[in-house]
Length: 161
Image (cartoon, rainbow, N blue to C red; front, side):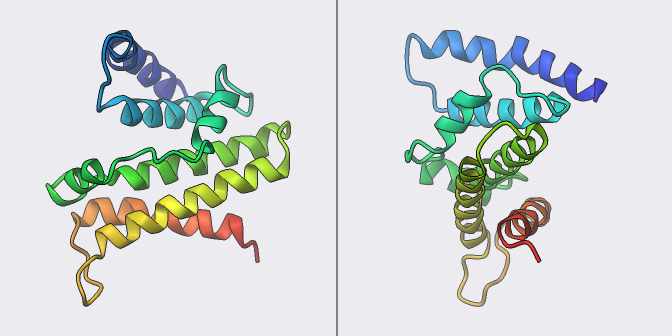
């Protein structure tokens, strides 16, 4: 918990705050990436308490606009990064839904909508990472393994046994 809080502080100081200042002047391609990482970090640090801006993050996730342009996800997935941007959106959705459960302040409907959006992005990541005709993994194995963990967890939360 302490380490996550420190990472969040460093990330805000050196990454998100400078990009937010710059974004006011121009559109920045890294903005969705930065926001998604902030969601994951803030949920990790939240300690079962809603964080400032959580409601806005939920609304942003659910606003119907694509969070990751196809070209950006392709670049991350195919060019050797150990990450899929769509998988990062799915991870942010999973973290938000888990925090919604822990806070017990939001409606189940909003939680379910966030989970459904996470599954949708996770499915897109799955297709991108396994896109050859034989269903072989074409992304770095580390990225696929990281994604698979969240994919299974999202599915289990959507369809409890």
